[in-house]
Image (tube, rainbow, N blue to C red; front, side, top):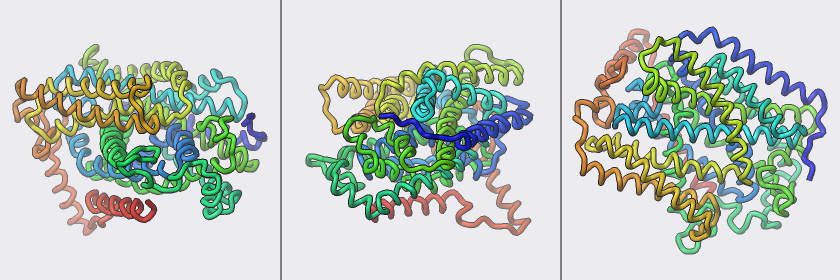
Amino acid sequence: MDLRLDATLFDYSFILIYIVLVVLIGWATRHKVSTSEDFFLSGRSLPAWICALAFLSANIGAVELIGMAASGSQHGVPTVHYYWVGAVPAMVFLGLVMMPFYYGSRVRSVPEYLRLRFDRPTHLYQSVIFSISTILVAGINLFALALLINVLIGWPLWVSIVFSAGIVLVYTAAGGLTATMYNEVLQFLLIIAFITPLTIGGLARVGGPAGLIEALNESQVLGPNGLSVWGGTGLDNPTNPYGNWIGIALGMGFVNSFGYWTTNFTEVQRALSAKDMRSARLTPILAAIPKMFLPVVIIVPGLIAAVLVPELHAGELAYNEALPALIGRVMPHGLMGLALAGLIAAFMAGMAANVSAFNTVVTYDLWETYIKPRKPDTYYVKVGRRFTFWGVIIAIGTAFIAAEFSNLQDYTQMLQSIFNAPLFATFVLGMFWKRMSGQAGLWGLIAGAAGAGFVQVGYASGWLAFNSSQAASFMASGIAFVADITVSVLVTFMTKPRPIEQLDGLVWGRVNMPIQGACPAPNLAAARSAEVRERAVTGEELHWWERPVPLGIAVLLVCLIMNVVIG
């Protein structure tokens, strides 16, 4: 089936304007880069709302738009689990519990925390693993963007990949993280501007929400539980595509979700660039508010495609093509150009976020720490720009790995089960258990990755059965978590723990003091007291929604209500 859009020059003008804007932003922000902290962490100077929108936009890449629409058209309403179970609780947890460790210790990356908490072998292992995983995910975004351009415009796949990668390279290398984050804010607004009329127009084609539900009930293309969030999740013969409620709650909602949102440096980097501790903690919590409601404009188009694009369930189109096919059938000229620009923005945001995280970890955690230490600060800015170039080049290669998967969400969840789930287990145990030894960090991570790999190989070979590839990934995440914790505990009791005074600022109960081994070493209690005194002098008081704890609790309550009412 030919999905090529009948776009006009006016439609293509939207794409041209967008590309010019992102390059200009990169060029304008290059003057703000004078130190390595400016290039890699925006000088830790950005307000909470900028960081929150960038935090959210960094996640709305290929997986969010193409992948979630594909899952919506294939599995239906249960896909909202990725938001209400698999995102919002972990985002709030990151802001309330883990950002004080990250921001307070002044670490420049997530792997750097592991070096301070555990030892150099653990740090080296995770730095290499993160570099590999993040460039694989960058390849997903790049492939999805190239596929979109290929299908909708007709450019050859390799031309689309090289062109898309080149644009990201220009603005990321020029302005560093600041250019990336300001572009992410622009990209988020553009995405919403395109996806909203697509959803409204699609609903109008099927007779509104009631007509959509009726059409899906009649066709039964989504199966018996396609219109129920929690239907078919019982322990006895579950029919929900994501498995039983234990697998959803523990695999997706705890291990996979917390493993991604709380330890994935691609996201955490945005919060680390905030101007102060309160802004850093508010970043993921503020981002969780629109995240709760994104299914309305991201999953619903997948449901509409299940009705308006029957070729999906007939096997004539891959589910990854649900969103492009829907655009061709719903969007008129003019808005079609906006749709193209919005999709390109989404994929560039996802890829740029991964490339910026890649160059930070490779420069700080590998090059500076193990290869070329104690060089002038300007040297590391130059090195970071070089690794930006090589990161984009490698991502071009990994894009062709993503091409082997018919559903990008399947591929992403597989990667998360192997790379993120073990890391989360190590973080949780290391942050809350002072006794955990340095060697336990390394062996726990290896055991967790091996456990997840065992499940994935078993499913691929056919001697382990699950309802879907994603259900297998949730189980793999659970196995990875248990294997990591088990091995970490065993190794800890066989080895010597680190002296408690070396863990100041790194473990629960010892965060209100200078951290050992980091510079500068802030005192979080003193910083909070200084903010209170300053506001007392000016007579300005914080509203409840400006404080992380009450806002986080409110977000969790709303999310719980949505699960109960709509489930």
